[in-house]
Each structure stands twice: as structure tokens, then as C-alpha cells.
Image 1 (cartoon, rainbow, N blue to C red):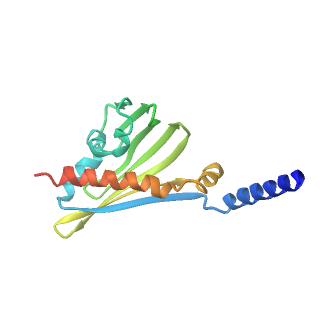
Image 2 (cartoon, rainbow, N blue to C red):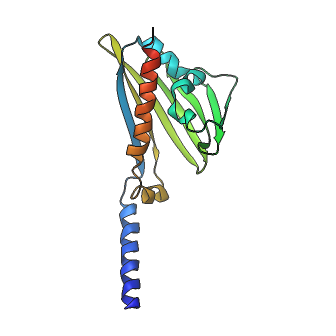
Image 3 (tube, one colour):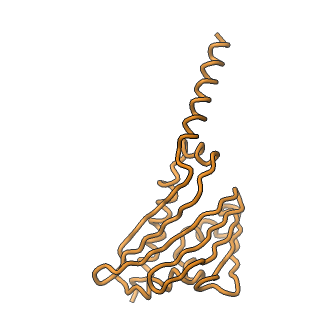
Length: 175
């Protein structure tokens, strides 16, 4: 009986590992919101890392964490690093800035795990305001594909993106 149980567990584990291998080798998480503010005002909150962290929900995860800004904080090259017990460690640096339409950045995590992703913010006129989209995309190594069987990254990180966009909306819509 013990031998049969072992075989069943081994088969289930093998099936799980094979299933993980069939998952996509890249990911994309994206959320959008409409903001009743001029594109230039919204752009300023995204294009400067100091202003970005005024609404970035990930900067608030770890109140004891340390954020260090580079000499350049806005536009191409603008960057900051973070280190915290809850937030881990990493760096974000603006790689493209098109006023007032788009900001793209490299997002590098070093703790609790290493990951290298890209972040894109697009600002599109919509009526008297703008539609803002926050997207993150990058490679999905095998271990991450295995983890996504038990953990829905889109739902978890997507909620943080939604909270951040709501924070941005509140700031940008203030008179």
C-alpha cells in the first residue's frame, strides 16, 4: 500500500512539473484608469521618481524601508533604489520618457529573488482627462511558472497597480 501511495504522489508531482513547463515563458500585468486632469500634470507624477513614490503603493509596503534617489530623479536616467524587510531590494530607472505620453523603466529586483522586468506607463487623452495604463512585463523563468500554479501574480500585483492608480488619480485631480 505504501508503494502505491508513493507511486501516486510521484505521478502527481510529475504531472505538476510538466504542467508548469507548459505555462508561458513571459508575463504581462496591466491596469488602467481614467483621470480628470491634464496629461502634463499626470505625466509629472510618473516621470519623476520622487513624485512617483508619492503614489506608488510598493513604496508604502515597508514604512521602515529605505529609498535612495540618484542625483537624477526625472526623465531618462532618473532612478531610485529601495531596501526593506518587507519590500526586498531593487532599483527602478527610467529608460524612456516621451512628454506627456509615455514613461518606460527598467525594474530590477535583487531580493527576495532576482528578476528583471520592464514597466510602461502610457497616458492617452480621453475627453477632458486622460486614460493612464500601468503595465509590467518580463520573462517568466520555470520556477516562477511553477509558483503561478499556486499564486496568481496578475490578481495580487494587479490589485497593487489598481491601488497605485487610485492614489495617482487622487493626487492628480486635486486642484
